[in-house]
Picture 1 (spheres, rainbow, N blue to C red):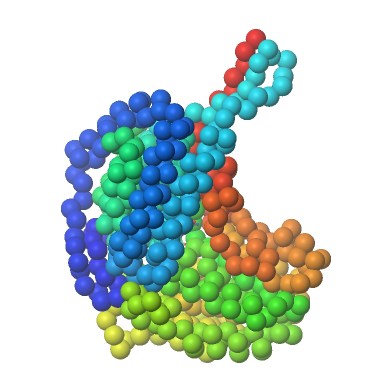
Picture 2 (cartoon, protein in one colour):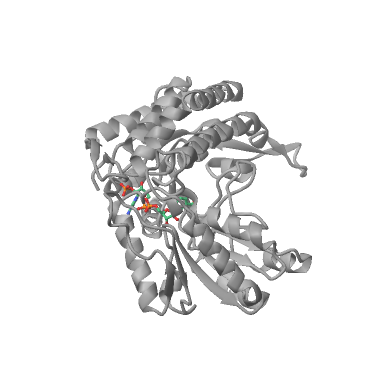
Length: 455
Ligand code: NAP
């Protein structure tokens, strides 16, 4: 894939970039390693100060950064602004809490003194997706830098200007040269990086094939990885739910980021008793969404990020129809305009055992299933190769307890949509990946947990 900015709302190529050659990559790896030897000696208060400064820059120039995101991958500008603000929050969160998360932990044993010390590992490679081009990177970079690691970013090839802007923010914030570098490279170079001694571990957010290929390359070298992969999150609505709020939230949870979020609600599993009403209200909400130029403040749904994503999504929709599904709104790309626009789409009556019912639909397409009761709802929710998040709606405490206990996912949100929050761990099980980002768990992923025993 070429490294380029191509406006998804118009199809226009705005800027292309040369990938780094092998010598340039080696120079960056050398710099990362040299910087690490000094950077690891810096104090928490220095790192906190730089990270707070990065938050200041993000807040001051948020419109500029948001515009870049919208231009490169098409998310509505207002959502891009919110994303930049959230990056500032995660920087401030780790600037404040990392010293506590990484303090020595004393453990009573028969030694004179025994404790756990957390130490940085070195250069960590982050292979990142385009869908949240700033947030995905900052949620890796903030804890990694506070822990004393240095970062190497291989961003998605369609967001190179975002990738360079992030490197620049971290440099301007005062972090030493080389503490965080963007590598403009294609995916084919990732395996070589994993084989390089200067790269100590890696995190990847993206698709299953990308995750699997990174894990193979890392496994050969016995290097640690964190994988945040796809999801097909269920959104379960039971009979006692507050239906109005559930429908409004369902619409937001499906349409977030033009439908291209790993934790978007994708499979709507609704109790038969309220299913007619839910379907009617959801249809009304989808009909009311404004599709168009993502730069406009009243746009709800912008274009998909690339023509390839549009094509894949449409193929899945046609596959769902041939498997027995019925489209009640949308169902075809919008051919009346340039760009990668797909309309809000609802598909009902897909047989639950067809392979397509288990796939991740990465766009504004809701699959609506009806179930007789909570047992069937949980069974269907778990009938998925993925296990990222789940949202479930009920006002019955016993039902709520069962949903929390029995749903196979990295997160269950009751009467709320699934979202990430720096204070809470984020990650999946099953084919959604392993490891956790954010919170105390996130910062402990890329450290050496050193046991110390003093007799
Ligand atoms: P993708 O194609 O896997 O791309 C993600 C990143 O991986 C890009 O930087 C890409 O580089 C790179 N990559 C692709 N193939 C690779 C390979 N074989 N080896 C190493 N790196 C490789 O994913 P996407 O289509 O951009 O993103 C959508 C997917 O990400 C969805 O499944 C979504 O659910 C998931 N996602 C998960 C989370 C989470 O936290 N769990 C968050 C956001 C997105 P190039 O761009 O150069 O190909």
